Image (cartoon, rainbow, N blue to C red; front, top):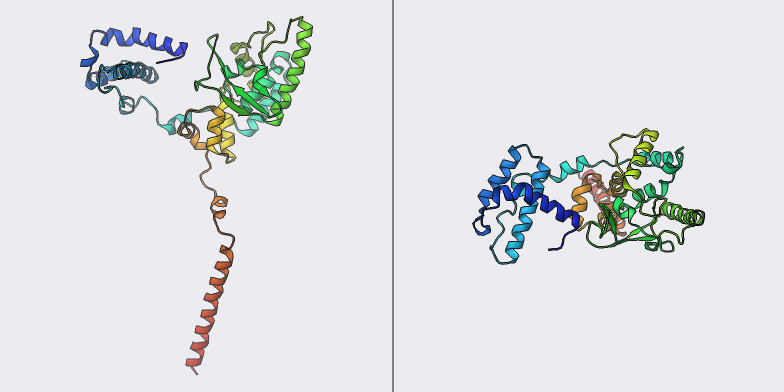
Length: 328
């Protein structure tokens, strides 16, 4: 099994703090489903956060999956316990926790960025616009290089992400290509021109490869970006609960609200499945679209209806005439 360093660290910490103290002496072959269920239930009642218990369960399940693959056990006794113990929130509940800006709020935020009196905050405009117009995650934006951008095709290739100071693959585990709006393309082209001028001013041997970089030419620091984001939020009069990652949610929710295909949103975000996209952003999907069913009507359908209605009217006239004749 191949996992990212941060995931591996999480597994190791979970094993050391939670699994070994209780299940360490137990042989894998004798580890029954009931015992695992009781173990997880005890963690829940002990006051450990539900999400932390979910991670404990996920770690144990991954270990037992490896035991199944190695032929040590025939089936994983930890399977489906997460759903049984409600360690994973329903899709509807997760959607309610998502914080996404409205179109007006995005506009106010972008305007506040451009109007910022602090030049460093104003310099974050291309970065924040990128997050809002592509759904790229913060770590992916930090690891973006100029060679990843194709201005002619208006496409960006996302192939790496910065995580805990390390360059890794994106969260999905593989690269993806995302589309660039005209507004974003212009902003990034201006940034590239400014960066070339800055390279000469700083006396750098060559222009830094990172699209968003520090004065030292290294990837931009995430904490500095988050602080700038908070200042701009306040200047725009927007709720302080928004974070840079909310711009990713904003991108997805606005696309779905304007009836774009969930499959397109899935590809842009790099989700593993369309189910994940719908489970995450389903509440923003339009619930009704009469124009869609109208487009199913055959072009000749209106003529058929007209003939049918005309025939019904003619029959009614004949009936009336017959009735009148019979009464004379």
